[in-house]
Length: 113
Image 1 (cartoon, one colour):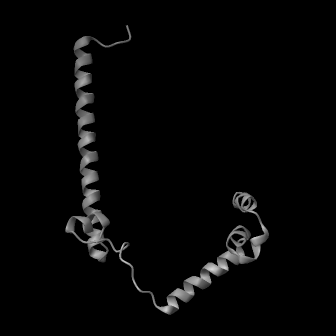
Image 2 (cartoon, rainbow, N blue to C red; image 1 turned 90 degrees about the horizontal axis):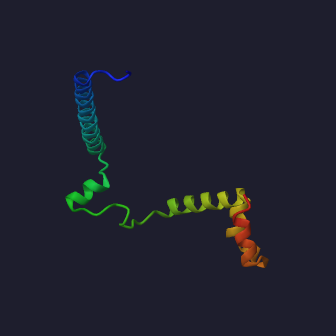
Image 3 (tube, rainbow, N blue to C red; image 1 turned 60 degrees about the vertical axis):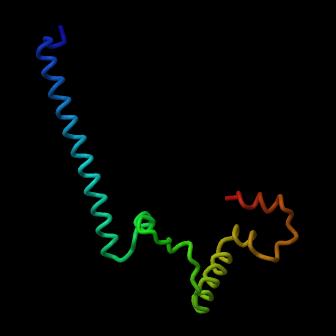
């Protein structure tokens, strides 16, 4: 016989069950401490979590538009233009010179790479 006697088998099952329960409790405790740690670090930096803001009743900063200075707008615009010039796929999509291409060709160009 390969199986242990029934009494010994019951003892082994109990030991395994106790060990699994301990591991589960440790996992839950680690998860809770990780959440607490995350909340503490977010609060220390002054950056609130979206869930924390919703719980406080505040609006998220993403939905509120802000007025950007002209210098920032110019910098972003120049970055976009340089990215379009460097990438041929973007260039073919966003440039005005490619009006001679049909819509089908434009769509085909999107998936060339």
